Length: 141
Image (cartoon, rainbow, N blue to C red; front, side):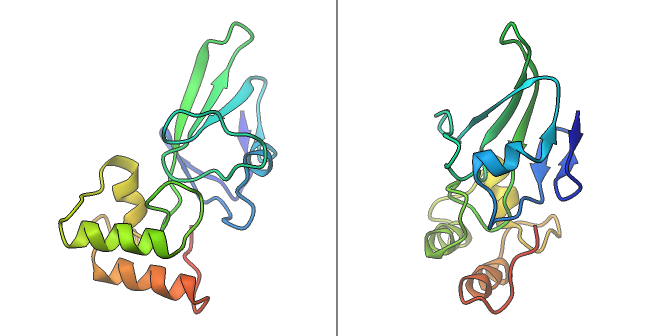
């Protein structure tokens, strides 16, 4: 199995997806494997080729007997609601986390730590989403 150089893999997590080219079809093109690639969103629904790959998505490599050989969780920094886009909804979700109204968990918590300092997402991460939305500075994946 081989991943395109743009995709970063850390154990069972995948990040580094280009958010302008993160449809299931485009992501599959960046993975070279003998196995079948299956993609599911964070709710467990199978992705169609035109669907966006976002935080919480599962990328599974399965053999001819449909046995899972490897499973990866996707992290798209700034995409804290899992739709594969970075927009005002993500900003709202992150602000609710910061205000402790509704806490992020798992890969969504990691996606909210946009500056990748390992800390809990903060107002600085919120500012980075705002700057991304306004196209002042795009979030590095």
